[in-house]
Image (cartoon, rainbow, N blue to C red):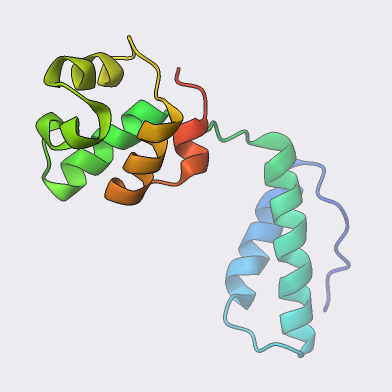
Length: 121
C-alpha cells in the first residue's frame, strides 16, 4: 500500500487522497489496490461531508429545470396543479406545493418526492 491512510484532517491530506483515488480508480476488487481504493473512498466522503456542505436543491427550481429539459411549458402542469394562475403562483413561490401536487409532479416529471417536499428558498 505504501501509504498508511488515516482520517483526513487537512486540505493537503484530502488532495493527496483524491490524487491516489484517481490513480486506483480502476483497481480490481479483493486486491491490495482495490482495498486501498475502498478505504480512500470512505475517507474522501467523510472529509467532504465534514467540509463541503451541498445545499438541497430548491423544489421550484427543480420543477422549472425539468420543464425545460422535457420541452414543456407551465400550462402542461395545469392538470396537476390547477388553473394557469395557480400554476404561476406556485412556480413564483407565492403558493406552497400540496401533497397532491407533489404526488402528481413526481409521477409526471419524475422528480424525487424528497426534493419536492424540501423547503423552498
